[in-house]
Image 1 (cartoon, rainbow, N blue to C red):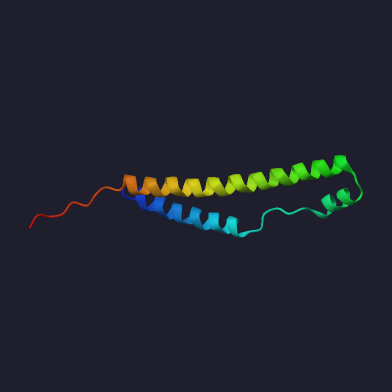
Image 2: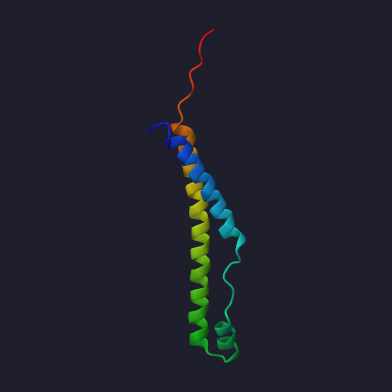
Length: 91
């Protein structure tokens, strides 16, 4: 069982890196049509609420990206730390 942990950690780190770059490749949340309408109609309360919602979405995306890459680093480091060195036969 202990021999399976390092490769499992490294494979998981690889998948996390792929997922991180996939999330990074998607566009960040943009201003919605409702936000443009609220701005054009001078509805300050609605505009502020929609802008706060947009900021929360952008923050969630940033936290997700940082978390995914952070976990990939942790899993990769764990995989290498847990590996035992191979013993060489004296010859």
